[in-house]
Image 1 (spheres, rainbow, N blue to C red):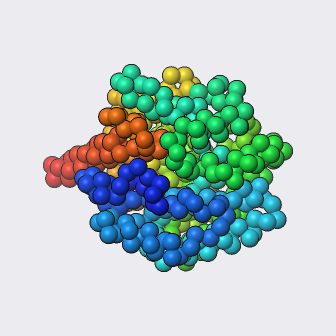
Image 2 (image 1 turned 45 degrees about the vertical axis):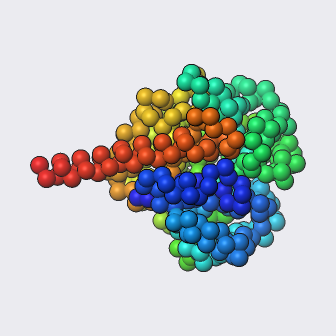
Image 3 (image 1 turned 120 degrees about the horizontal axis):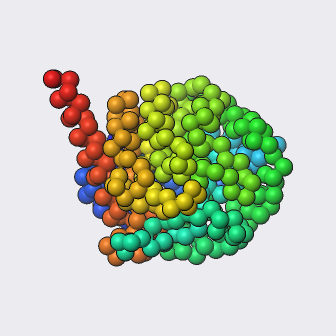
Length: 363
């Protein structure tokens, strides 16, 4: 297992690499080129320069998130083959700088959504918040205004300007698409891309839908154990795997997160883990919380134990954190302090479980 930290290059992150280097146990960063339009090839020279910058700070880069999938691929339009070809070219360039894992998603129109990016918590910190009824009352333009207007000037993955221009029309498009057709479009992408992922030795790790239930009638398919099983059967290659995000799947209180972790880690199909906690106020109302078990609905000990005991050897990063200790100018969810606390907390649980398992075997 490797503990890493998400970082946005190109001056698009409030957290410098030298600070990340000082977090105990963190070996590297997960990155993306946020200025490359969706569907374009990520240039090799840019990737090489980024890698050199990260390595010079004493960190490694083996994970990328996200090479976003063009909407034409998700829609199944005739133009999708051109964008899939570009995706494969990007995979080849990523392989040349030593990338081993690619986190991506197949969520239509909007990758993720929250109704408030700085919801006040009782301890004085702020966190991202989701209220389903509030979201449904907001039209897409208002949601975009909320998301981008409170991002502290930073790029928000999944909320690219080119997407926003077509958001209303795209939502309308999906009203006439069946869920099974969406699954077919996903399989078409996988069957085209996975052979190259195998050739370039890059594990493809799909991220669950966030939130894990339908919004505006858009298809949400990576949101439960049943649907994850269906997804993995679309292409049986071990390179077709998961980014198991506990917070995204945990948005549905019916999801048994330790059981989901156990099942798919044991199959060798989990390549990346985003671990965070959330606290529900209602069935479809929750706030992101500190990683500590008592701060949310998820038992972090049981979650980490499920990863450890089933042989997880991929990458873990602490997912979205609160804004604490006066940190106000960071990208929502991606400040330094709370994520650093989360990384060390998760590493502490892992070490305790690992050492405890050795003591049990000796006895």
